[in-house]
Image (cartoon, rainbow, N blue to C red; front, side, top):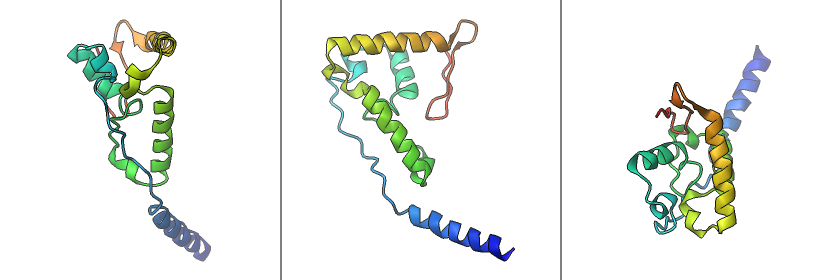
Length: 134
C-alpha cells in the first residue's frame, strides 16, 4: 500500500508540473478576402456546417474546448489542429494555387461521399461535440 501511495504521490506531482508547460493557442489573423466561405460566398447553411464541422481544425479560427487547457490532452489536441491546418487551412483558401484547390476538392468530395447516408443525412462527430445532420 505504501508503494502505491508513493507512486500516486509522484504521479500527481508530475501531473501538476506538466500543467506549466505552455501550449501556444494563438490563432493567426484571418484575411476575409482569402477565407473559403467569403471567396465562394457560401450559403449560410453551408457556412454554418463548415464552421461547426471543419473550421476548428482547418482554419485560423480555432476555438479550443475547455479540456484543451489540461496537459497532456492539450499537447495532443494542438498537434491534431496543427496537422489539420497544414493539410487544409480554409482561412487561407484564396492563396492556394488552382491544382491544390482541385486536389482538395476531389479528396473532400470522396470523404463526404463515404460518410453520407441517404436515409439519415450527413452524420459525423465534430470537435465541438455536436453532430451534423442535414
